[in-house]
Image (cartoon, rainbow, N blue to C red; front, top):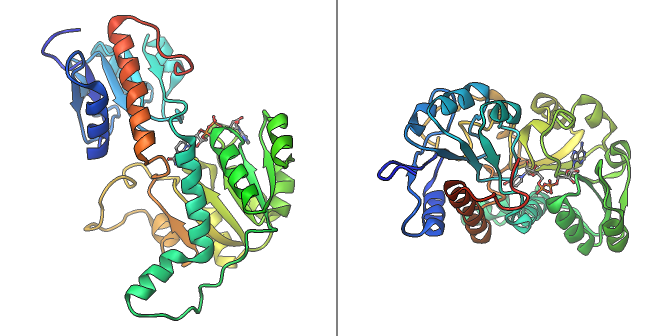
Length: 336
Ligand code: NAI
């Protein structure tokens, strides 16, 4: 480590990132240089003097970015998130750059936010809150449905999907699930049934996406999938925006085929989510259209945002940065 120079350039940071990372780093051996802007090929120069960079979900760690980082001597990319679809791992290997992520920080945080979205969207508490504050005590348009007795489809039964499935079982829902690597013991013990996506589409009243973004899951919810869904289905996505073809979703909302949608992620969220654009003209026409539907609820990628999750993300990230600096192996299960 070169004393006096930042060891780690930390991109795309907000006050809460800085607070938790600074607390985890404590006093001493790590120098964290925080940047508010995201990492991409044009901003990679901001890592000058650093041996490691720390990034989040919407930083673009593509080949050209990695080339720029490597040319400046960066040897380590620490992702402070679970998903890694924004990193070209093949290029990182070629440039001799190690990459780690935080595979699990709080699946409960993400699952509980999913449930918050489902309950809010169904019982329209967000609309009721605004109405009551305006002294409008009318209930028209606020009719929901009982979750009890309905069917939920969970696509992806990893850490998050499993918790969501179990909570929904607690509401008395029938739960169907799909995953290329089914966990049958878990399913049997919780009364959950693995089946094909086509059956999930045809039978579910609520479909919740918990699969990573891969070539296979890109636009998993497309025109064909939507055609197989029940009319009026509730669709929930807290995973990655590109799992859904937004244009097709808008069409399905207009016809009523899709009854309601909750999104914590959006196909083109980079540069929009996490930012305060309240004084600006929104340039994204599909997001603007989505925001006009009364039956669409959007949060800006906040499912992870709990005290426990932020503390754990920072603990694992800082520990890996220390291990990198001292030539120790990275924490088990974090290397990509
Ligand atoms: P995980 O890796 O524990 O589980 C993902 C599951 O999806 C695995 O069981 C995998 O086999 C399955 N899967 C892979 N391809 C599939 C396919 N084609 N169809 C159905 N299932 C498939 O990941 P975890 O922690 O449950 O998170 C899931 C995703 O949620 C992450 O990849 C990430 O993109 C996203 N995420 C979003 C957050 C937010 O704040 N909105 C926070 C954390 C994760």
